[in-house]
Length: 213
Length: 399
Image 1 (cartoon, rainbow over the protein chains, first blue to last red):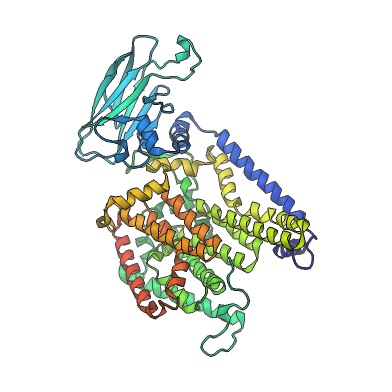
Image 2: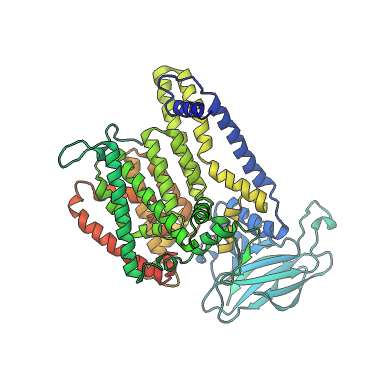
């Protein structure tokens, strides 16, 4: 067995020598089987990950979102209109970094939340004391109820009316750590399809702009 | 790839012209490498202040991740570390290096610090061995002793003595290139398979094997017709499939273990890293104008990293001009992939790249610069010791 394996190995190492055809089918067929295995692992891993919702949202969905958008700066401009600071002044890819989890793919005006929890992660910005979120709401009723948390501490509950843009001012903690996480709990996310149409996304608030102060 | 064939340069004594038997030349090379390694570690001990605590003292930053992986295996879920609000996990550590530490510590009952240190430095010796033999084959002019000394003294080569995967990666990459240059494609593919299970950029060796077979098939087609070309392509299926197998086995393991075959990519978000256009990263780095942070304790210099990237890209362009396509591709693609995740740790990925180091030796050993070779090596050695000194101070820019 070992001897024949060595013979096959030698033949493939130097196929142009004495016996160009002998044994050539054994390893190539094995190679095809390995290629099939590699394709199966890739496809299964990409299409059917066996992970919980949090992991999928944070690690997979947002990573794919970043990869699938070819022009990162353009995407950042589209996703978040920043009033007094250009997003491009932040590190490249910052929009992917800012929208941590619980967001739908961005649209021209901004981005809708996805589900009951939406998180934003802010990079450290020395000298800035607060950040304003410009939000709009979607709800079958006339307002959306949002509870905000900053780095895990509850900030308060806010009512975002359907229609006008609401500005939510978030104070940044003093002695800011590496990053600041803003978690928004959305009380009544709903599917636009309930009002007619085919949009089955579960949306609650729309993030239009971010402004540091 | 192969620029010079025939007699291995190191097997002939260039001073006396006497032929040295191959085995004897190899034994001399191994002794030389072991001697250089011992001298290097002694110098490190002088910098650190003690020889016995050297493995533990050098265990800084990601060393703990590798040791934890070697002892406890892979995480099931991301964990929230005290230093970060992100969930991080050890899926970024590919299995070959922690696996070797695990096996070694099972065989020899030593502390995990010492096991990691011994494995890393053994891999360094293997790297230098294969690099010297590779240079014998492909370099326009080479010298075994000079090459071994340069590779041991190269400033950023200090990573190869740490409990990091750098030396294992470099050793496997060099072995794969060496066997490819010798024409032992299956052996090369086997090392490439282990390489792809050492770091994700190891999979970049696969296109080199594909290119090798395509070239051979084209030559056979031109010389002997379609059947000969097809036979070459058919014989290449197994090596091409084998080369990235390590990566796919790791993905399969991750899928069975925690459910995400691409966890090693996705978990990068835990470190706040996202994929970016490498050229935008490069441009931003060049414009950052922060060279003052090159050896800063709390941050890193984007401009310095961008200059490293430019140096690496320049070297790969030169390799391309010399028609050494495999090395050019490997160096350039490694740089671009590393850059796509930002400049954190970038000098390590770029300057401690095995192709970068061997090619730099060729440059300094070229006829024009050979007179300056000894001073260059001396400066390299001083820089390396200085970097070890900075490393001991947990310098953030070296992470």
